Image (cartoon, rainbow, N blue to C red; front, side, top):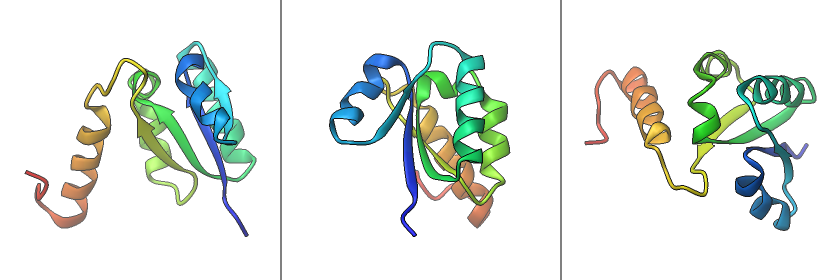
Length: 104
């Protein structure tokens, strides 16, 4: 079975993914992003790409889904560029997995 992939974020950031035939969901607030991610999880999406700027507003949602098998939430930069949140979360995940920061 092929995993469904969705992209959630600001309209200008998700639009390019629409051109690549990804299913996109433009959101304007943290509350809207929370609802959309919950809906996608309930609809059995396997991967959700989420802009860092929206992710920064919903750390509790990221923490919850980090402990779940699916969906995998992967942070992507917005059109303004990376905030460093994706790198920071990846570093924390690797450190928990291997017991030390090996990405330096």
